[in-house]
Every structure is written in C-alpha cells, then in structure tokens.
Amino acid sequence: MPAPPHDETGHTWHHDNQLLFAYTRLGGQELLAQRGITDFKSGMPGFKDSLTDDDIWDVLAFIRSTWPQEIRAAHAARNPPHE
Image (cartoon, rainbow, N blue to C red; front, side):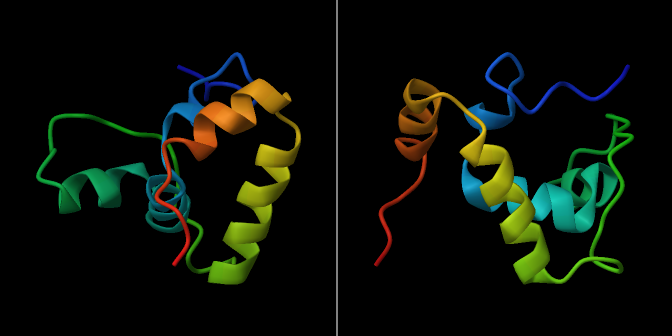
C-alpha cells in the first residue's frame, strides 16, 4: 500500500509530534519492534542516517504548515504544551 498523504485527508495529523518524529527517525519496523509489535510490516524507512534530528523536526513543521487551520488546531490538541 502506498503511504497516505500528509495533508488533511491523511492520518498524519492524528499522531502526536513525538510519534511522528520517532517514526520518521527510526522507520516503521524499528519503531514498532521497539514497542513490541512484530507482526506488522511497515515500508516506512528510517532517516536517522541521512537527516539530523533538526532536519526531521523541520520537515514535520513544513508538513504541519500545509494543513488547514482546523486540522492544525486538532493536531495541536494531541500534543502536550511546551514547558
């Protein structure tokens, strides 16, 4: 199956920032394996060897910037406030 779109029609915004970061950094298989899920195959590669952590946060910020305001608000509600 192809990756879902990262716009408001996809499910990216349903996930909190920390999960999106970890999924992008580690890739689907490694992240799921760390969480004890071994029977799900993910085609999402990890980018820890090609992008810095700051690069990953920048990519995620760009994706969020393309969402309509109501989706950004819904996503923000899924994230803890900054300390």
